[in-house]
Amino acid sequence: MKKNYKTIIQIIIGIIISVICLYFAFRGIDLKETIEIIKNVKIPYVIISLILSVVIIVFRALRWECFIPLKEPIKKRTIIASVYIGYMASNILPAKLGEVVRAYILGAKEGISKSAVFASVVTERLFDIITGVVILSISLIFIPNLPGTVLYAAISLFVISVIGIIILVFLSFNKSFAHKVFNKVFGVLPKKISIKLIEFSCNFIDGIGIKSDIKHIFLIFLYTALYLIGQIFTIGFLLTAFDIKASPIIALFIFAAGGFGFAVPSAPSGIGPFEWAIIFGLSLIGVDKSIAAPYALVYHIMGIVPITIIGFIFLFILGIDLKSATKR
Image (cartoon, rainbow, N blue to C red; front, side, top):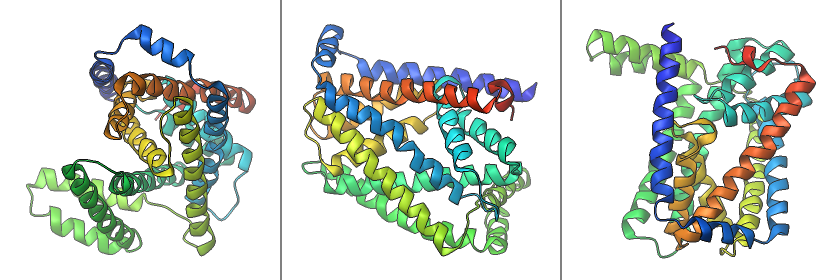
């Protein structure tokens, strides 16, 4: 009952955030003008972008396998199907349940323990956050004509990210030392607070799992690079479809901005924060809101509709009940 209560609160908060972000994202936008701009986009570029956006998810699936510290190999088709179903679930279910769904499906189909598969999800998401911060900060540094405050913030963000990565990598490979550090640092706080913080920190570090051999570490960075290259072309083609000047740096910047927008608690599929982040990001590079808004709409629809359809197809093929897959 308590868990259901917390979930309902998360859903309500997510909806409120989505409504607020949608209001600020599309405030002052002329609907007729937006429709007219969408009608005049270059369709061939949109189609290429759409196909790429669907295909490159395979690289994320292959990378996820490298985060699961198991000796026995996992069937590629199962892990790829799990990721597409997870994306589909994130698009239609609240409270970011897609992560739970993909973990459940992979665990159930491949006989992997819950602790191992959820540890891999934690590690992958942590890697995504770090990658996103680095990409965002680097891209901001190289985008011309940005306000000085934004540039200084980007440099600071990059330095903090590098320091954070070094500390995190060290602690994840020295878990017993990490536990001692957490006990020492949080032990000075009031007992109730310190116990919760120590428990959370220790569980977080213990949950970081990875196949630590050179081959899989190399594959993690290879699949990440291939995925990012795919995103550069996906976003680049869509920018071109809207006659927006495209470059690899701008594409990576838009990708990172959208990623952080999607990470904000919201209604299903990140609706609201995602659009606001994309429109705000495009405004920083001089794109008028009247163009940025329809771009954000098309970009988001491309990330929802085809992947949701593919996710349902894989769900049917695997014979999985979505309701049972959402049980935490």
